[in-house]
Amino acid sequence: MSEVLNHECSVAALYWMDKAHAPEGAASRSIVDGNVAPQIQQMLGEMQNRGQLAAGIATYNTTRTQILDVFKNTGTVNEVFRTSRKRKFLDILDTYAGRAGIGHTRYATSGQDDPRYAQPFERSHGRLWKWFCFAFNGTLANYPQLRDQLLSKSQYHIVLDNDTEIIMHFLSRMLQGEVAPDLFKVMERIAGDFDGAYNIVFIDGMGRMFASRDPIGIRPLCWSVQGRLFGVASESLALQNLGFTEIHHFNPGEMVVVDKDGFRLGQYAPSPKKASCFFEWIYFANAASVIDDQSVYLCREKCGAILAEEEDIRWDENSIVVPVPDTAKSAAGGYSYRANIPFMEGLLRNRYAGRTFIQSDDTRAYAVRSKYWIIPSVLRGKKVFLVDDSIVRSTTLRALVKRLREEGQVAELHVRIACPPVLAPCYYGVDMSTISELFAPKYFPPGTPLKPTKEILDAMAKEIGVDSLRFMPLDRIAESVGLPEEELCLGCVNRQYPTPKGEELYQIAMSGDGASFRDNCHCAELSD
Image (cartoon, one colour):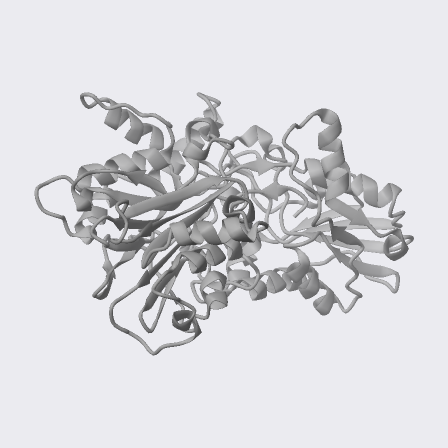
């Protein structure tokens, strides 16, 4: 993707039970002395694509005074866990050893460089069931209302003012009482208050763990069990690379409770409908992952094939397909195969470009240039079909187009996008938070057909500076994913949101009333 469309985090959890509840395998054999901390750190590294601003773990160990202990900081997983310093790295894993634990990687606009915003969050208490740590993936669309609801009560104070803290307070309220409540009941009550995406992993001082997927399943979550080891992750790849083989996907509104004696899977809330974010398949997830039994790689490859089927520009012996690395490679491969024209990597991603913390105009320009390497010998004089997975703001794509023309010396440049035009904000964990930031909405005023006409496509191509521009047809997205359209969240491309609060926030955005949603929530970051 030419622009970095950032997403709201990943979660992981492991529990080493007293008895085996499935055949043993590579995952269970990887645990040494019942300590899951090294494996959680590994899982977070496997899901680094979902969050690079902060990382952390919380583990459960009754041999410590600090039964629940949290280690977290800002930075990538390798930076946080000091993997380049072997002794320090091993010391961290030893200090935070435990038979059970949860982990998190984070992207967000609020408190980017403040370790307090890193997850897991901990709520300490003398009562073991009221002492807990948790992490979550998603965004609460009704976060401002939940905050106001808490502040209206006597003696409530919000410190960090984000939806993670709000979830912590709601969990605390549900854990009140003189006996430990059933965790299914806790989540059942919370589900009545929350609107949005919220996959949660949780562990308390009694050694009870749960993992839950929100009632409409916006974000992915999967689980597996092998021997005595139970695992949960946002992406199947993290479990697969640990050695788990039979990986299952949580249904919307489903959760699992795990303790030393075993696990219990069940429904904590009804699922009125399913609304999986289609962007997970298009861009966010690792291409090697599977979401809801649908391969991410095959979805992207199918998107490219569909673009080739819809092609109205003639190919010739001078034509080549070039992907914008890395997430568009699968789509470009599908396009190339269906079109029967060469797949060439005329662009290479610079994997050694560091993060830029001070963004002056000069450093922004340098960041755009340093992100990709142009290969003129591949591109010179060619009729290039450049495949990207989406256009959000278009800022970086325009800069890339300029370089392809000037440095690459292409003869023609035709951009093909494996996603429909992005027309509306996301309120469920992706930072597309103001309509004015987006490239496409001005070409599709509300009430007009969502299928772009030739005149609209020509105008959009002219603005970007390419010979032609085509998008994945909206009515073929479900075909590419392999799920019914009614089971997908397509709000950002069809302006129809799966929850009441999403619809309300869009109407507020259209009216231009109030601050952007991003300024009032724990959304993920969109950068050019």
